[in-house]
Length: 575
Figure 1 (spheres, helix red, strand yellow):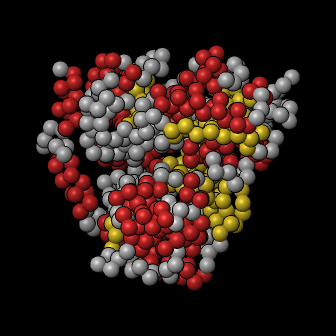
Figure 2 (figure 1 turned 135 degrees about the horizontal axis):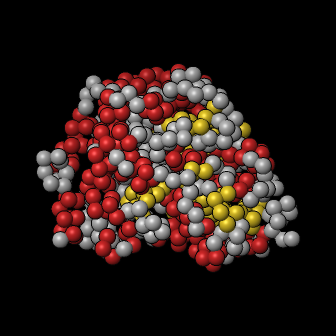
Figure 3 (figure 1 turned 90 degrees about the vertical axis):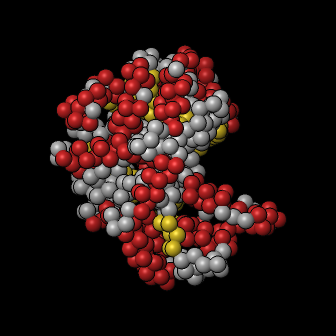
């Protein structure tokens, strides 16, 4: 029978829902060969200034999305990828998806997003809150303070701090700023689980997002008593809003529904895998399913994931979850909130027209042009040190009130020098994460790079020099989507487990970049300076960044003493 799991023609579809677009690959299950791909940008991209329609403005630190954009990816990019693969759709035996996280939305009992209801279309809290929505920092601070005061045992699993990006902080913000939305929602759903719900008609939580973003440890969530200590009305958050069956990675969530089959052009009833998180799903695509293999997925942000047989408390990590990456092993996560986003910000705001014109004349984009100029310099020649906190610090400080710094600028400093200093700052951030894991007894034995920033060889060499580790690189430019396709093969029964599927379908180039000893020695000195700045601004010696953030909110009408701009807008909408 065509498309049966045992046939050599069998393929799976992996869909990676990123920050700005959905990316689809069709992969042969026997050997991991990528047969076809497609990309579809989200119509509304990131909503961070004004809601669709242009009437409702958003305060600082908000980042929303429109769930209908995700369905467009299924309707457009999946059929396009299958056509590009040149296969019969009946050869596809399974589909799997991954998402940014914590990207989360309020829905009715049947999965309808609240933002699609006319009465809530003008309320920002009814929309998807993207992973980089950082407006719940005050709520995260309260969660952390209360957890420390109560000596909650789960806090250590997250390096001692819960992020404002995660489910509980966003849920508490929703309750306290929009109680009517909170009351109306039946489920607060990770987008990773919502899209699976749309594909197969079954709502099931995935173990990865539940563990890393939902404080689900040892098969339980934080207690009702803890939640009530935050706010009595929050006591039922788990039982009423997020609690649901949790399934393991690689499990079958259900069969493709008739509706989704019509959207995608795929056969009704094929396996739909349990959802996953974009970074974590990439590890099998890179063959990184053994202890000590760290994968850094480098794009707009960077997420570092690694499996281990051992549970340790690692300061500032984003979570240790059993089965969070590979079933049967402890999965660790850390990350940097801004990497590619920082480079994009610099090019968009700090590069003069003369440089942009020169790049065009050379047939290059501005990033490539600046990289070429920066690569001509010796290590330290620019006299600069930067802190890569333009979007806060996820690891190891877990503080999204921090902000970017560059020290050493003079009237002679040139754009390419600042650009290089930003590249180096992100590499220093990754080294700080690796050293924290090593010091905690979870050694990093291998560093594998995936993600869109692989396309910059100079950046990769900087990372090898700064970390003093050889860099292996994933062969695919679509690591998360391939990782999803691997999980689809497991859900379809083609491979018995994720380890076996990764062995058959994962691909990596070993030791692509090796550290240059002379550069590494120079970077050791610069990294020492980075650590001084890191601890000075990040560990309480000078909280100027926090104070500046508060002043910015106050100027936007967002201080605790003043009515927030959002409150005023929403109040007007509700009137």
